[in-house]
Length: 305
Image 1 (cartoon, rainbow, N blue to C red):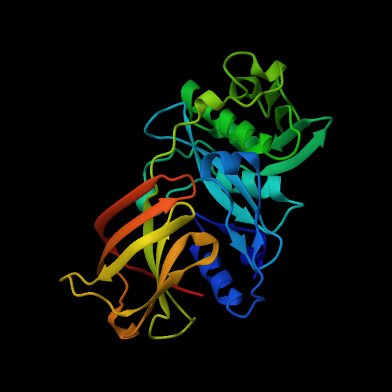
Image 2: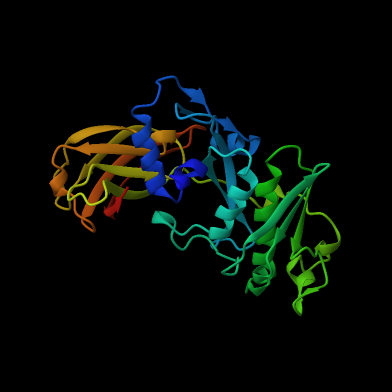
């Protein structure tokens, strides 16, 4: 599956994440530490292990809706080293509005925006966007966060000193009658390379439960497993699931790929229906010692793989 090959994502593409989990059941037992960027290790600690193959952990910075002009780091994973920059930017362009994070992030990139090219030369990365990006309705603060998100995301890969942003190959002037210079910074940024600004990064909160999603084979009537997804790799100290009346679900619970989820293999799969309330109690800690616990009720999502 191309999605699984290219990108196993912490926040989106949950089907791909589970598909990889299934494949790992028959994979060699030898565990290999995932290669991580320094940015990943700074915000999320040591990378988890995998027996799937050579994998890479990195960070994508999403513009915050709560604090305009700021960005929030999130962990992502890929097996595709050669296209890792493009993979990261494409996910940034796609935004993130899933699970318990709905509404917390801005999507400043105009629909249809795509990447025309990414080139690195002597420590300077130049990314060329399509003209649709000029249709963004972002104000100055959000536009600044958009640029910071691009620069911070790209700067973690290799020995990058600066980032240049182009639109249809131009760093200033106009594209189809639109002012490309305006997008490139409200302050003359079109005339100079952009440097990463870590002051734009918001401090990370403790781990958060993202969603509860049941998976089943295509065309199957009953679910195969129920996944409790977290927003980063965690150690799960306590986890229990119950129905809307508080009756516990029975079954075996184990860790998923990349330590991103707890997976319940239910003893009675027929009990799980799309949209039903599932009560979850959890107690987790991430790789940097940030702990979280809570009890909440979530509407069950059911997806096929």
